Length: 108
Image (cartoon, rainbow, N blue to C red; front, side, top):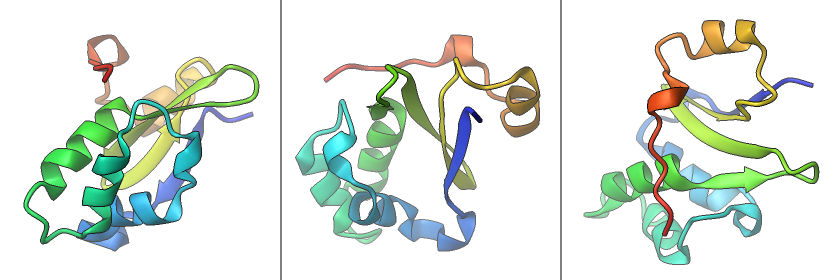
């Protein structure tokens, strides 16, 4: 089982946050306020769109049936990853510049 899943290609551009709010089953997201998803659904012209996307991207997570925590990462494309399930090769190839130890997660 891979510890990385591609969610959105970067060709969606500024609409990725809006697509995230509209296309994902948000009932399985944790640590996200419905108000934030509503803001993202408004699209990139909404005043607080980018600040809200940053908060959602850095705080939202999904817990699978096995208790694994999946977080989100954007580097052009948007990925869902579970650090515990990722191989060293996945960490190196996909997130070479990403330092998991420095990640800051804020609980609502």
